[in-house]
Every structure is written in structure tokens, then in C-alpha cells.
Length: 316
Image (cartoon, rainbow, N blue to C red; front, side, top):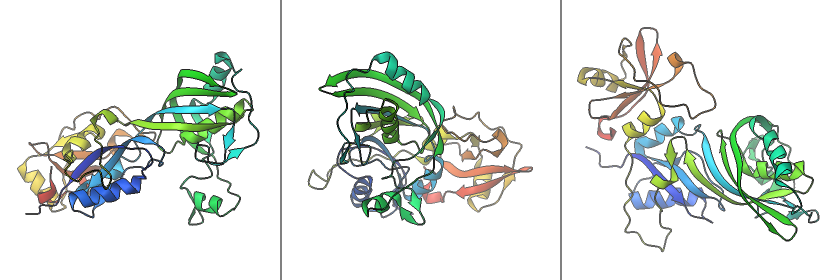
């Protein structure tokens, strides 16, 4: 019986640490190389980072596209080369402190709903096999195509004036693939004053919140830390419809065989992703009586076809 860890780890990423630093640290602490993530955070950002451990890495496919919630601070009055505080200033400082709440709200309304967003030039998007940020740092002119995103909420929760600058605290609900830095850039551009992000915290990924996450100590901060993993069944049941299976069905699925599709499927959780599939096309989590994830299934005619099968020693 394997003793390797399997599951999902919810991490509250500290500032000035890369997501890859956290992944490497978790690999060392858990003694396993099989650790992946469901979407990175910039080094300056904090908040919820979802990691897959062992067989949990295979579940990341169903987590990476979930909607996100962020708390951000946007500074209006100057743009930067990276659309955040770590970039070089662009142009002169503009007096943004005179912008009224009504004018800001008008601009925010244009950035809500289904919009076409041009990602930041220092994003990780690949252009001809090379990351956009690598091309930008090499001095190349980077032009990225606009892509559709959905901003369900973009609400200012606080404002303060610092000389010519206007700092806005905001809460943003958005689809996966949204660049909050680009929202800061576009808000500043709408007023002709420039804008960039000075703080960012991811507070939720789909139904998972940062309140349920834990801090992973960096090297030198101590190694005696518990890293409790969330079971695959528990995680899958929060993002996918579920299908209870008996012992015989679990055994069949475990060998990659199909089972009949006349079983009753539990209703799907509330949608948290942009591209919702038709009910019959949505993957389903097959769970045994103990709530362990047996397989991820898709309906195919009169049967359920396994898309992913969890080995017996990794079921949790």
C-alpha cells in the first residue's frame, strides 16, 4: 500500500514569494515530487493558491477554470510598464485626486459584464512558444490580442487621496484568465491619468476561500508544520455533480470499465466557471459510500465512461 500523500492543499500565499517557490517548498515538506497548482499568483500578490498533491494533480483540470474573487488596491495617476507597482513609471504624474465617485462609477460600469480584455504585456501568455513577459523584458514590442472575460463584480470599497494619486480599494469577481492588473490599467486609461495595481489578494477560487487556507513557511521559518490535505472526494463534490456507486461499480470503474448510466446523479453545485457545459456533457464525480473519489465520468450513450480513474491506494 502506497504511503504517498494525495489530495488538495489550500495555501494562503505570502507576499514576495513566487507560486513556484511555494510548490517547491510543499514538495520538500511532504516528501513528494508530484505537486501542481491550479493557477499561479504574482510574487506581489497574496491569497488562495490551490495545489494538487499526488493524484490530486489530476483533479486540477477541474479547478483551474473556476471563477476567482480578488481584493485589490488600484492607484490612479500614473501607469507603469508592468501595470503594477513593480514596474517602471510611464509618463508624468497626473492629478487623479480630483476624480469624483460618479466619474469613477461610470468607468467601472464599462469594465463590468462580458468584456474584451487585452492582457498585460508581462503576462505568461505564450507568443510563438515564448512567454510575453520574456519578450517584453528582452525589449521586444509585445502585442497581445484581446480575449473575452466576464467581470461579475467590480466594486469600490474605499478611496483615499495621496497627493496627486487616487487609491481605490476594490472587490472583483471574475472568470479565470482575467488580469486584474489590466483592469487597473484600463480604469486609469479611461480617465487619461494612468493606473496600476499596488496590492492584490485572491480571496476565493470557486467555492473555496482563503479562510480555509494555511500558511506554508518559507525555508528558514521552520519545518515542523502540518499540511492537512483535503480529500479528492470532498473537493470533487464541491465543483462537480456526484454519482454514488456501490462496491461492484467501484471495482468496475477501477479497472477502466464503464457502468450503466441509469443511476441518479446528484444535482450539480452552483456554477463557478465561465464555460458551462450542457448537463449531459458535464463530467461527474463517482463517489463510494465513504465519499471517496473513484473516478471522473462522462455520459456516453447508455453508459458512464471513465475520464479519470483514481487508484485504490489514492482514494480519499
